[in-house]
Length: 156
Image 1 (cartoon, rainbow, N blue to C red):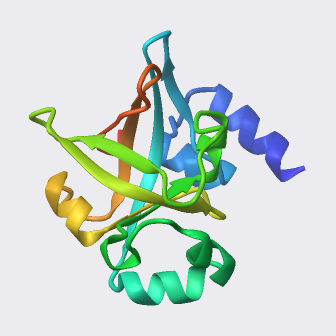
Image 2: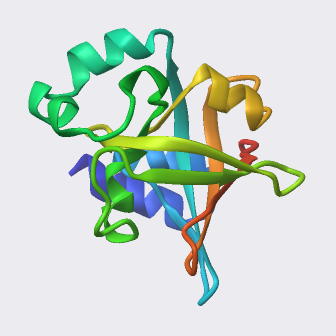
């Protein structure tokens, strides 16, 4: 079987896979660190251009209809599906708090969980977090208040 040969090859340590390669091969993201205060994952950060198109095409009309806030000021965040274990009680419109490198809070609104396990951020959030290019990032979640910090993940 091909996978058996691949495993034997990798066990010989002739070739080491980077975290990004592991994510691609396994079609899931790797839990990199865990302690009582933080959880770290590697996720691919992607974006979208139009918030209005996103809301119209990706969110059900019943969710937008039941939303109590102002949709014109809605900043949708799509969390990776794997974070459902961390954000157990989150619902459409709940605030998600990111910390920039100076520990300033940047808020977005939960839209849904991603079907392909990516973190989808609008351009204004990416700019505020100084995310200049899309790709893999280390996502660090503080377990107490569920704030998110993002660090660029260099391929190893």
